[in-house]
Length: 258
Image (cartoon, rainbow, N blue to C red):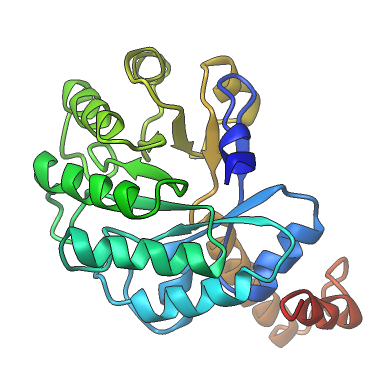
């Protein structure tokens, strides 16, 4: 887990691609990424579940048990902890760590567009760190993602989460350069941002970001490419080229069995 922590370097950020199943995770590991995350949207949608509703606990744990066999560091998106209080979320974190996870994302946004009270979120973070001290807790605030708080609220929440023991803070939707600088300089924890359209890794590195996540982008890209290919073939166009060959994809299964 210390290896994962060391990858969070302000100015030389960890680029963290997000997988949704064993095949996508194994392919990213083979591509040379030192660490991967899971995407709650991708995992939920792949199992016919809605994201952000706390319904994917069983599926997430089962997936991590398979991903733990891969030769790559894995951090898991657990939404808001899939329901329950601090003890239940700490149990979840312990189960994931036992399966091989080096970190979790724990968010304060609710499906109804509101934010969890700061004290409640602090209690979750403290419970997880008390139960699994070595697990990297990336405390996510949805002030920007849900348009539920300004910069002052973002700073207040991320500072509180860092003080509670969070190893990193994540503010998806944060894109303004001055706002990013304010969080980087104003919070005693490495900052994770979501790669949004118009943002680039070099530009975010210059701002002092320590981790850049792709979120559900890769999953949505794969879905879009699959539908586009099916429509093209149905319209009489040639089969697409430049895609991974059958044997290469089939070999990914062996990576998840080690």
